[in-house]
Length: 267
Image (cartoon, rainbow, N blue to C red):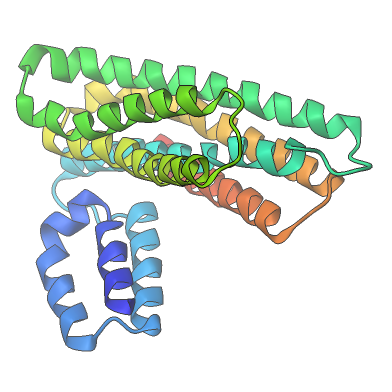
């Protein structure tokens, strides 16, 4: 089990790192084994690689890689952080515990609208990149990483529509919900990883990434606002370990995106 955990963490390293050091690191893990200490070290190394990438090359190449790393980090942070919004909605309001203050419902709704705004801004940044990179080249290698996320998204939407009407509680229904939840996790992973792989393959020039990075700054601000609003709502409601964990995930994602965007703006 620990060996599987080590392989999963290796996949979490940014694409540029795996391309340069992936085989060497995998061989090192093979020699050391996949114990808990190794897994923790790998996870910390993956976080450092995302937040402080080793950008080699001349000045222009370093700036390009910095902007590319910021776009990738912000996108992954958004996909991870935004998952806390529906989770907290269910934990706090489905159903609300007795004595839950009315402002909790308002705050959870506000977090949802902030999430929608962030999705619009993130889609605008993706559209700018697509129009400048994907459309002119029409390279299938750039589109291939995006397909799994799109397919899983369609499957999950279909599953949600099928499970939405009232159902009699049965083993079949519970199995369907479990399968849908597993698919939801796979969809989040695919949607987070696909654009990152496409961005690495495309290697867009600095001038193409400038405006999307500005929009990434807006996404980071909105993600931070979502984390703050959800944190206040969780504080006012009946706190549980799972609720606090969801708030922590959103907060860490917001910090990572803010840190990366700040470094990009200094270029």
